[in-house]
Length: 202
Image (cartoon, rainbow, N blue to C red; front, side):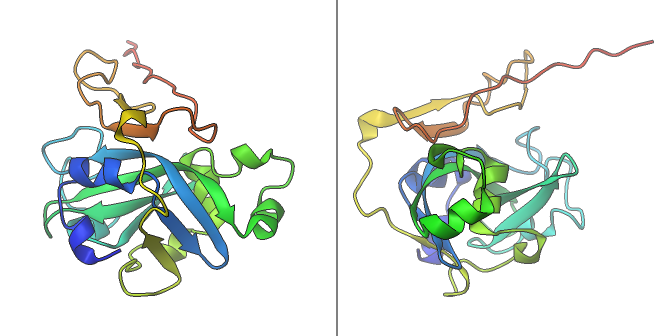
């Protein structure tokens, strides 16, 4: 995928990533679910909302790189950096279908059904073998991680949008940010879980 594809607002890039192929070292996943994050000052759900930090430095850089972070102290999640340099927008790669390298994928996800190998952002990175070492990698430079256009276009009528998984917003239910996109009817799309509002205790 050319850098110009990613150098657009995350909310434009996100639905167009559906059906695209993500490949790393012998395994290819067809993306079926993604989430957009608008960035500094614009999106409370974004890691970059409060500004630049060592952790989020990649998000403020050139479009077409991966932002990989550790979640809940046990999982890696991968995002495609989008937009203009300095703006910090990204698309979380939430789920997909393994379409090549099935034997290698199965060895990385023992005990799981095939539909569950990359069903969720942490499962997707583990199936592809993506971790902290890939934070900042340029996916437009022909390296070990790359994106490719869909082998066939996704019917726009099948594209759905709604609140992001586990991310709240005004009102506490996340509906103010319908930034999650998925292909309707795909068994690899992850289960939706609404955000849980934490009550302050005295």
